[in-house]
Length: 430
Image (cartoon, rainbow, N blue to C red; front, side, top):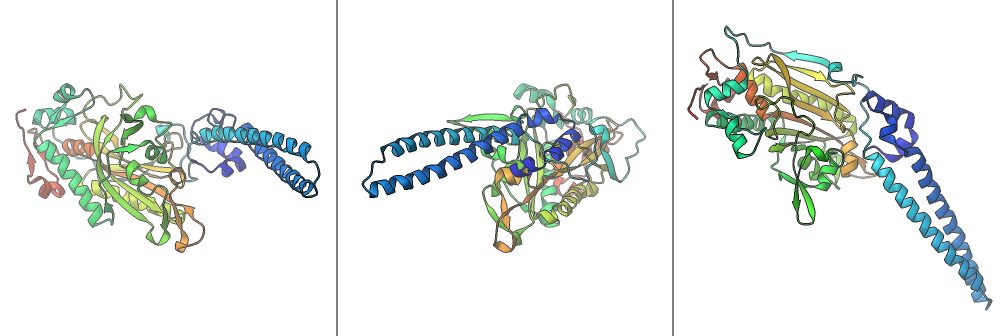
């Protein structure tokens, strides 16, 4: 969420940044200017009237002290009290309307973000490696997984429905191996602390990271007594909210955390997209990286976080590219985002496998996460960052497609062999 005073003082800039995102400023800001003026007028009138009432109260006290009649002034103060209460109530109503507008304003793109309307305007930053060469036509993962007997989509439909998966034997071990490999890499070599958070969170947590209220349709809600709980769409939500309503000592920053969790997304509005295989699932597993940083350091930390995610692919020997998302393709809460896209030879496309973002103070203001420079003085909002490192299911299918062999088996990347206890994934009967 943006600061109210900043929005008020920089409306032309806000409108331009909203346009850069491909949105209509009038639809986003609505009647912000008018309501803000009405709110300030109500507050000013209430304060003026209260000051006048205080002066009259002093006159009443003086009259009573001198034994004089103060009944008319007493009646007048009663009228003042009712008018003040009405003005204060109006100010509160205007404030509620302003907050509804504020929570609907997206974060402002950083000046380094390419301006564009869609993914077509994303800018490639770099590539690593090269695509594998085959002397046969490579298959997509859904065919390979079925042929090997390690990926079972039909039984998942029977158990739950579309966009779920069952992994068998070496398929299940590969998922587990990838998660353990990623966690060990980030904790042992990259300096992250591992966290195991709850998979259900309250509405305050979803609000803090920006999923609520705007993206409720994309979430799985679980009624619980007189409140709602929500299945997490990413570990970003519980891990970022660990420090909600806390003030951190700047000497602790940056704080770097990692977590492996299932993620649950309704994928509202995405039906018909990526329906084959496990590209877009309602449930998938992911290793997440989350950082809390000083504002002066946050963009340096974004580069480090992105490089940490890239290292996973480099150690697995998977060809990928990094793109800087345009203003029109960037998420609601992000100020800048890098997407890492892995090459899938069975589909002959690059697919997103990680998004690494700096949210600056946008989430911290919603979740009230602050820090003090030197541990003293006035508190300020931290900058929050996160990124997938990586989405385990998409890494799974990238390994399957990139390491397939002519006989239908799959070579296990060297970095995973100790975790898998095998060099080859061979066929099994379902």
